[in-house]
Length: 460
Image (cartoon, rainbow, N blue to C red; front, side):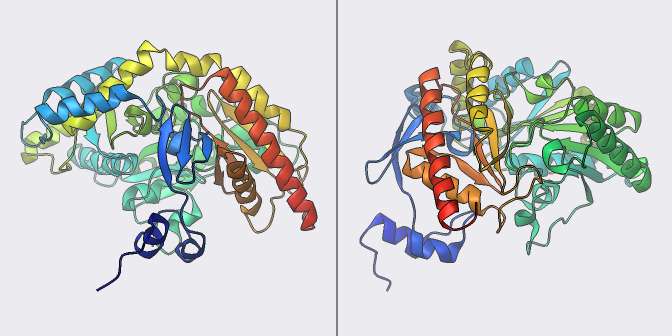
């Protein structure tokens, strides 16, 4: 019989498998164990305080200690702790939350399907679109268009839509028919001397050429985050989304806006698609939907998608897809209360009001010797690090400097995320100007310490 380790730290090393982790390295380094949170701050088992400048995983809109969400969960647990939504069953929290999401999403999006995560939601989108196309008598129209550096989840279908090597290598992905287009990040992928407008035009030509080469009658949908999040916080060049929408309409390709990170004001508008002026056929949301207090995601579709799917269910007798916890009553109750807080405290407006302070504050580091580019909108941003800014050359091995900056930031009491060559920021929507000033101060100290380290190592 295995003996029980005598500390949480030892127990974690002995028994836990962590996502996005070098498991052998974890056996040596062990975990940072968080014990409690308060607003934009969290505290570890050693009593150290951190500003959580990534909102957990891009998600805790209302902060880490909102008792109204705990109370909403408890009240629903006492009333109806669980029920499903299969075969004509329903309950009030999921009905009310679907109604609220229809109210908040762009005009014409009138139907909601619940899942438990963004990955499950995008997996469901793939199946729903395939089901729709079969129902329309277009069985060959099954391919998806995505982008390199995109992140849409890690299940088999959503992981295939994702365009990141670490999510594909040795997982045998992509496993569905998907074509990845050039990442719309001008600083990194623009050609020498190419203006942003020319870069946009080139990407749109690439998209149209790809559609024609693949055959428009085989392409079902284009999926994209308005601002690419987990790939490194890439903001699109001007005119990009309008051009993408025009091509989708021209060739009868559905548009899927992945708003799992972008939604609920993160970009300074309610939805990223509204920030960039396009109207999707399908919108996916999660994370800030419940501030991640409980797992929940939602797919919101327009009438065109719903009618095609509904008509096919009438033919077959069912929509043979769903999850035990789809639209879980406790998660939906928390989602409703979370949205109520966002609206009552005008947290979407807070993101818009603090955009200049946050984005301009980060841009003060533009001339730092480690910094290649700073980009972002609303309350989401990334600092891309470069060994040679003019040549847009990353440090080697790839991502090593971003990890070092994130390590120094943690020592300074700031949690940010290393994403390849970028350190990412996405503070809770309740963040204040004073919080932003402290985030900037701790970021500056982390960058300076990383520079000293790089020089000592002969890297800079």
